[in-house]
Length: 376
Image (cartoon, rainbow, N blue to C red):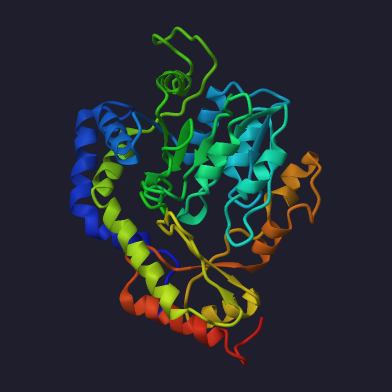
């Protein structure tokens, strides 16, 4: 039996009878850009996250770009973030001419090390950008503390919760801590669309108005442009699909947590394998279940032989990417992030994963870590 790393068709098959009428309703109305379906989704998700406002946008990347645009970033400004993540947050910073400043990740985790934030903050720092990686919140108490200077002035914190909608830290939802929280609705996310989509959350009334302005070419009223913005709108068909899936989001999250709990028990104590350890105060949603493997190539080869899917998030840290060479970082600057790139391996954990499939995954991992498993 082959075990896919992810299978989107299972979720759609279960929800097709609800999704198709929702799409048809939008098509009959021909209100395909904005409109009541988008507004309702924004209201529902703002309430879910625990903030006053949500702005639907065209992708998770555009959620980040729009939020950074709203801060008036300019060349020479700096944004402190992590080198161990997807490229989107760094690309968004650099598209505005600003400079990402990296801090290494935690010794026993994958999120940025908040104890290193203070030393990275300088006179040109304009924002902090923590990533809630793999569905687990960063240490937001320490991140928010670092955002405040001794004079009491606060740096804006932009949360990247692309992988963490539904995750909590100390009872608060990801996306509710900073000035803005940015989520992705990429199909494989915890709440996935049938294509790209995203949303920005905020409790700040003024920021909310500015986000809406910039997302519509800076026009207020229509055809009267106050600023140069962009076209970052969420389309209504995606919103209709997301509204259907939102009713099941907590169930999706609980299934992921159940899969993670099974892996935690089934894979405990294996030599050469380190399991994720969320720590006190965290309730992750496990968008990925990422282990560390001393000999990853050998285990991947064995999983492939057994028909078990896996993936590497991420094979190269951002500070060593060719596109960021001009930043001047060198290999060795962030050793924890670099070591993670050599060891991380994500196992199947999507909500529709079957009990017998996760058992096969665990069995294959145990076999692959035994002496004599095939090498590449």
